[in-house]
Image (cartoon, rainbow, N blue to C red; front, side, top):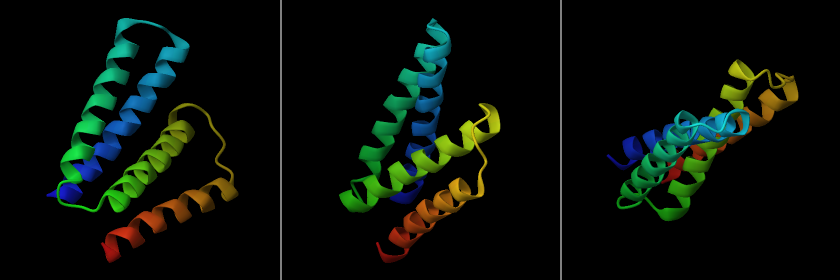
Length: 104
């Protein structure tokens, strides 16, 4: 169950980052709500995951999901670069997270 909590924690971290980006564009209640709800759910689920998974593994995978998710959302919805080098490093982050899952 810890891995499921961790995956959703990473997804909600991305939601929080999207909210943060929206706050930079328009400071309204909707933007702040997306940010606050995303971050609260992310940290809550991370803490639940850490009850059954090692702290180092949980944090590394959580930040990896957030990093990769934020980069992908940025490329798909905010016109960020899709350079092959960027894609290669995203793949490296993903492979590190998978590697941590395999040994944890």
